[in-house]
Length: 138
Image 1 (tube, rainbow, N blue to C red):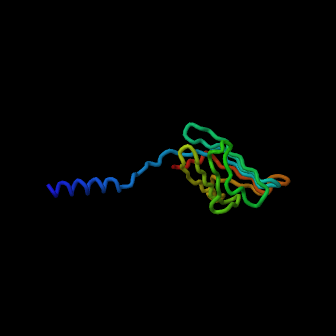
Image 2: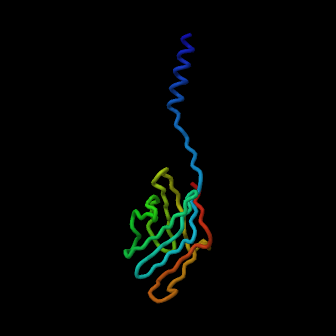
Image 3: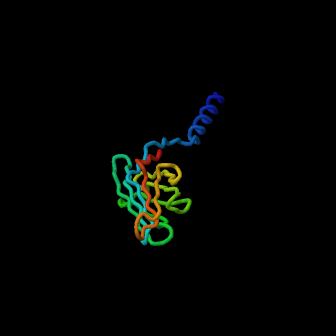
């Protein structure tokens, strides 16, 4: 009888102490990604998060984009954790509500998909576009 009670208590406490594993699934899909370095720097793209299609537009005049920029819906945070260079950067996107989750896109002009042109027209220093859609696994 003592063994049964001890075994039962031990089983109950180990079940409580076991961390709950949450499944991270889904994707963010970025389409129409483009960035332009000029007198006022810009970046724009459409973010598909589940069934929601969100426009994301950034405009900045400083050397780096705003540290905690957001997409137009206000629910998706945009950051550049490794700093920003038009030809090579990490784009971090985080849904902050209703169910927080995030992922990262890695853009590099040497990879063949992130294409940048220097001085394509007057007052434009760099013009970049992504060839296709970029899928971020969550």
